[in-house]
Image (cartoon, rainbow, N blue to C red; front, top):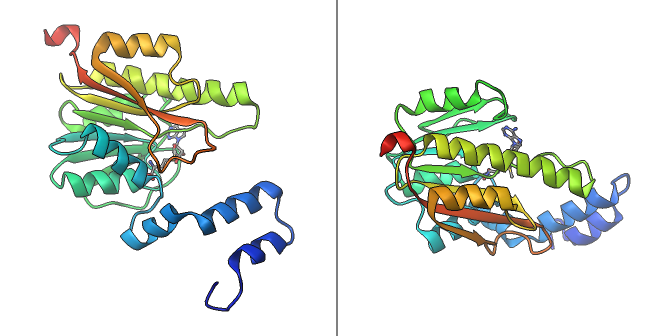
Length: 224
Ligand SMILES: C[S@@+](CC[C@H](N)C(=O)[O-])C[C@H]1O[C@@H](n2cnc3c(N)ncnc32)[C@H](O)[C@@H]1O
């Protein structure tokens, strides 16, 4: 019950002028414990808990020195990194604006733009040991197209990781159902000692998203 004594679910169900999908989204938001938790804990997104849960399982954040957050907006993941590793240098990028976060350099630009990788590299002043990608392409409703567009982003993130990570580094990325496709998996297995898939509990059961966690970057040929 809301403070006005009305049942929020009922209010949503009877709302006029909303599309079925926006009603479903609102219902989910109102009933979602992670949304409530995020509000209480001061995180900007419920997605923050996905990273916290991945960190619990894979121990990603403690001791991270330079971190890249691909698809940073609205900023939940960087808030989590900031808390876990207060001294880490963090740089993020997103098509959308992100409210400033203390000590985080934020680029409002397309990661697929030619000059994006160089901008991120320059901002970090050293090789990152952790590259996170929670990027997801805007969906158009056509399953194969949506899958391809998001996997294109993941693949670009993986190449960025292979070109930039410090030896021993970690790459984490959101992927869609079916996990990583063969080509991407081959790339990651070639360059990392451990490649695992995980669906953190905060990831909605009905959603096709998974995360790939690649740890133990073997280093670039020029690092040898
Ligand atoms: C699920 S949200 C990230 C949530 C974030 N991890 C958090 O905790 O607040 C995915 C983000 O990826 C961004 N994105 C999608 N395509 C992108 C691109 N080509 N370049 C940069 N960001 C992109 C979207 O704008 C969106 O903000």
